[in-house]
Length: 343
Image (cartoon, rainbow, N blue to C red; front, side, top):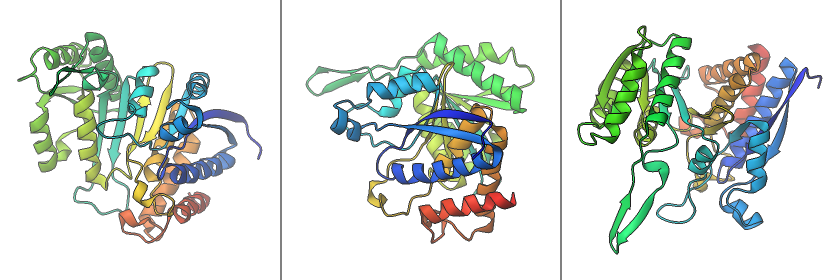
């Protein structure tokens, strides 16, 4: 393959269905790169339980170094133990590289029928603090305290990111999501920072909604929202809720963005019950790879993949079971690659 440039990408396939969807996405990205004369050098690393078994570390030092050097990573799902075990790999990586902005666009794919057609909204979530700071301790037996950390620096930074994105991409409205009626100091600080940024972007309409009311409003009429600007926990919950509008977590992409590095990941779980059965849908990770390609300024390659993906969904002939089809992971990847020839 003749390439005009080559990108080094840190690849974390993950566990469960991670290796399968990652393999499909790598094949598709490389096929698109071949057509646009772009090459990719994949630096593969294990993380989580597999890494601990092999190297004695949940996140090997070599993985940290690879992300520091390459500045960009693509990550499949990694299982996080519930109620014990090691800390979330996702949260650890976000904090390590100060990936302060979690960016999750939610948009319908053509041909896929859902209860809410025409959805096009974006969730911008602060990614480094809040309850996800992981500051917990047992005060006395049977009493545990978790500390919610909200800072002016992080709140202002994520608000600046959201408003700058809105200006650049022609988005018209931002809602800051909060619970300041109860958490008057922490969420109150978040809102003051959002308001301070909002006044410098007069072309963007700014509003505030309480998080529980937002859940109701989303279910009743999601079209009233454009960008949701949130703290860490609220954004995590609302992004999963919003994914249901377009078909579920198996379809929506995610990006973790900082000033130096970026990690692009599927936001769904590792689905160990279907691992190794060629059943998983690689769409979420593939759309995350499209975000990654835009990030590294490979617009033509990104648009080629997105157009092919949308053609496969519009045709509806080769889809995985989670979206009403009968095909497997490999066949779906083959279909996307084949569709590139006609887009």
